[in-house]
Length: 74
Image 1 (cartoon, one colour):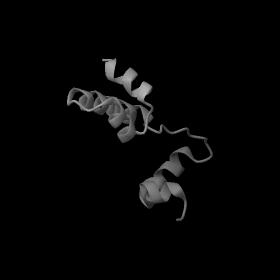
Image 2 (cartoon, rainbow, N blue to C red):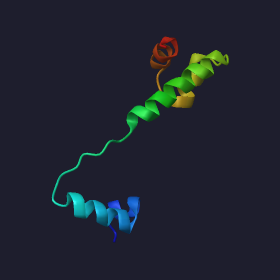
Image 3 (cartoon, rainbow, N blue to C red):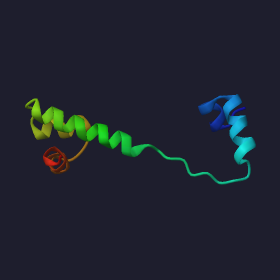
Image 4 (cartoon, rainbow, N blue to C red):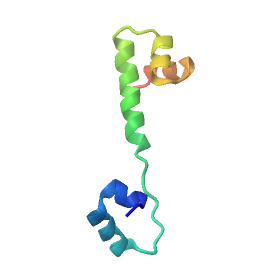
């Protein structure tokens, strides 16, 4: 009951997964690509709204150079 899968999915769904995949090693996605896509779209939106590169970089915790690269990409 204190396993991270139970805390994440709930007892019922965790038990179903264990029954289906018990003993196997599963590599789950961290969905980083979704977060990155959203972050990049927000960087471009902020830039179109007139924010300075250094302001955006501070807001999204990236370097100014990285923000500039993302802002010019479509």
